[in-house]
Image (tube, rainbow, N blue to C red):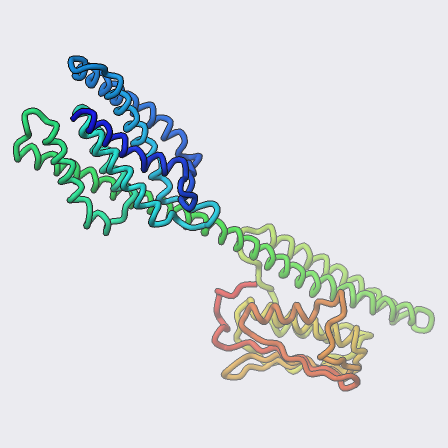
Length: 432
């Protein structure tokens, strides 16, 4: 009888050997995760303690019946197979490195057969290991099996374990003892299910944190790109325009120096004042960049700032047709920059003689129109490298929900129209 029991116990080790040595080949090989290595090292050392105690008890109980080496060999073979099976339960939740998928159903079934068979063998071979092995098995089943599986199989498994307790116990436990053992094992399985759910929540939280960190990095990169675009627009529309105007005035002063020195001195004075104004505006921009609050709004009204476009002498005349409009500071800033850019383009590139600037507001939108009688250009042709004025205009309007229209043809002048919707006139959410 003892030889039959030992032989059956050794047969129970076969599934564990198949799992660990990966036969047949389609079974997933063991992938012991690095973060779990220390856990299993300590777990194996801890399992040696009850296994050693059980060995002593088996040796004492079998000494009167003959050699004890065969029962001890059987106990250690089944115990090692049981520990190896527990180690492989980690692979139930691990993606295969070769296929990128979770383990197959065949692997899961073979693992469950190995775990239950070695558990049952240890319950029969050593009564002293019953509590330790049964509780460990139920805990691992709870941690690695879904709730639906437990609703179908946990109660029958607990009933079999309690029945095996009664076979090896002397005297046989009563009904209350059996119910107490069953309740303890069921609570252990429930605790394992809760551990599984908490682990899933931690993994979901880590995944969410990773996504948030990635989104934060992308948002930071986008903010940097937006700020670079804003700085490029500001430099183009302030220093770029000032330097262009100064260059034109100096060229005009050079031509007038011999014949009309008075006009040359006026142009030089205007260039000097424009240089000082550009320096002041640069300092204001640097102050806004270093400030912890939002960029400052101009002290002058929008109409006053647009009127400055018609002041420089020696340049093509600018006719202004401006009406007072209700706009947010950001929209005012954008339209002033667009008007300045369009006028500078007409003076510098279109060689216009007449330029008109019109600002009016309708119930639907606010329109800024800049027209000239210059040489015009083909709007279907790509912008020449190094010219960013039109792109800057469009960017400013897009950020405020507006749009830019350009009507031009070679020799037919140019008309630039900037439209801003009235619905966003006082919105503080669209900040440049």
